[in-house]
Image 1 (spheres, helix red, strand yellow):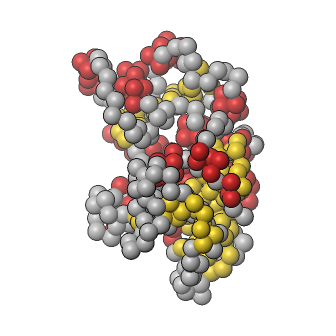
Image 2 (cartoon, helix red, strand yellow):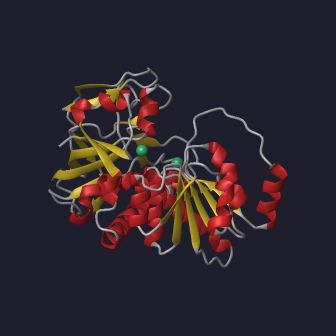
Image 3 (cartoon, protein in one colour):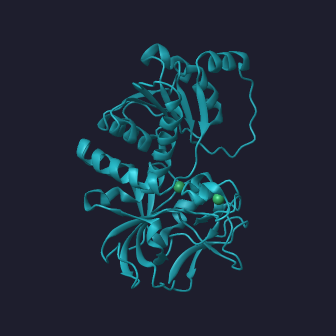
Length: 357
Ligand SMILES: [Zn+2]
Ligand SMILES: [Zn+2]
């Protein structure tokens, strides 16, 4: 079958090549790929900064944000039937740590996990893949047009899930949620928060008329542009938030976010920043506020099956609440043989996809 591969560790090694057809076992499901979503992680792997091929192999099939259709099922599989739309989770348990044993493999403590399209396991930029049914999530037809967003949505769902779990430490009646960054993760975060009925304010650099702002508004969120301002000015305009999702990709903003958090508030950090930047920060003030406000700051990455399932539930609710809003995130649909156009020049737009089938 055709697949898009990289040689991990080598800069700009991405190319299309014939790879062996995957063979479906009796306990597995065969899936034909429809499309993959592209994100910074794919670019980082192609830059040679990250990623590993499966043990004993030279190439890694890239791609982790996936959408496919069930082609065939092994004779022992009773839970899926051909024709169903499915998304696969990315991380596989290490089999060595208590979190993986408990199904919380997104919090693996050994580091010996595998991730499809990233670490030691092939991804989804291919015509087909096979998988065990417990790693597949079924999607209803109503959300198929934007179902390729389920993997990044699962990451957002985990962040929000963990924020609410942390806040069980007190009586928490969250009213105002702030999303910093209006990229795909920020807008998916806004959607998930709106699905929970929270007043949600999305903060972006783009002006108020931008597509990102219009999508936020369609989702029932407010949009504030900080094109000419600072995050530190936000409380004057909107009040102090109970929950903040940070998704700007800028570590600088993280420390501003700590300073505007409300009493008993929680700040969830979702940006993976690759740089080595340093900066002076008002550390006494930040610390004093965190202590006196009983505030919590935590990082969050990846997701487990529970978060994929919650993502589907929210997708259905959001599509009823704001029909068509999620599909507007998919701004660049690229035929998959033209993959190089994205890897050489990412361009504008919100989310790009490679159209496989
Ligand atoms: Zn991604
Ligand atoms: Zn583990």
